[in-house]
Image 1: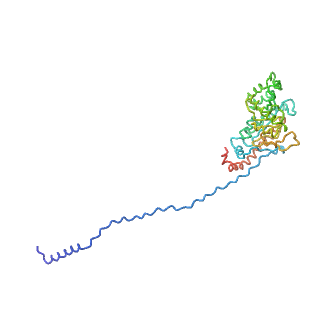
Image 2: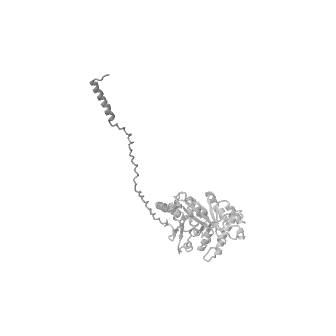
Image 3: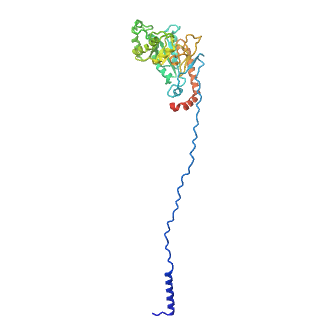
Length: 388
């Protein structure tokens, strides 16, 4: 094969191209893109917020409690005395919806013999029946001494107009002839102030006064035990010798009157008396102290100072020249052991007074209810809890 001049030139050019290609710098291979460094922005830390400022709870100032209700209907020397020391407990019991409402009142009436004409401590039969009817017509219902004690101490629920009928001394004929018809008809109870006396001596075996025709009270204990079994009687203590306790009475005599009554009533009536009806209405600070020590919860005088309400007992701190026989109770400092009693001979004329005191006390309590409940909420509720 021959190469002409043209072909030689072409061949030389080709050869030159090949040589040049072999001498050129090789093209660099693309390096894997160094994984582009991902810039990770760090999670920002929570910015520190300042500690919240707590608003202090405002201190509540308890209001000033109102004074106790006083009645202008009582004698100026007879004022109500409170006896519950724990203010919070008093307010709790006063306003509990399960207890007696403010203004609930108790009238205690004292009876002795019931005879022909009203004189001294004897009410006539006509006046007795008028009183019983008036009490019923004015909505009064009887309660026992146990109910009275629970009301005065804890304000338990009792009728808004309550009455305690107390017959002093051993009068079985009066019980059966005069009281029992009312007790049965009205579903009432009678509190009997029972003097123990000599027990089974000849005095107690004599026929009693005011007996039903044909009845033979040869054994007074058995007869009274039978009456007590009816559930209509509330037997309470009235002493053993049944002689007034005076300033000069010895501790032995006082203890004999108090403890002797407990022993005999427990033996014959299967109950322990909680009330002592002071013979003749006489009492002393020492006698009251001993009565409390022996477990008596109530005591009754013959001072007709007024009705009773929860934490409210009308008493006098001074001697009254117009009523010299009414012993002032100031030295005793235990109102529940020297409770007042209305006399049967004039109790009927005090009915309106008692109901008016009840109404006034209820209104006064309602006027001060918000203040007392606010005080209780601030001072008492953390310890005593809410009022039911």
